[in-house]
Image (cartoon, rainbow, N blue to C red; front, side, top):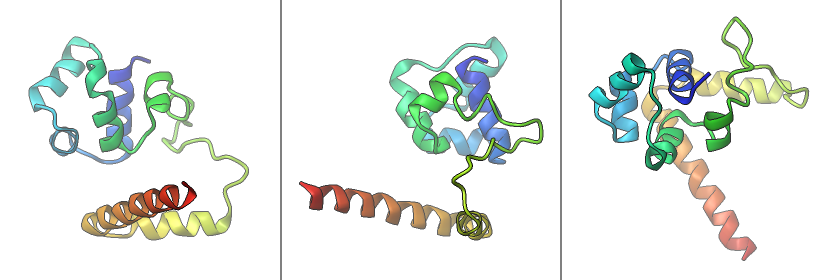
Length: 120
């Protein structure tokens, strides 16, 4: 699977439109359409923007790890360390409004940055 195919697979799994993805990644809708129509890949300078918008790592996007090996039902293969508490967090997250999800993700990023600063 090429990178652009992974992008569209993730979009489908996240129920995200090309337009919403384009806004999040700072990409023109025509650029995204070209990937699909011409079966081309995004340029290297856009990979990080794409990963941020899709909430995946560059490794996942470039290698397909955790994306290409998803089951037929569209659910990723779950690691054995996933607990019921983890699942509850995911359920709660998915029940939130988009604005709440964005706010929570911003809090998480800020907490990580604070933790990094404290470790210095």
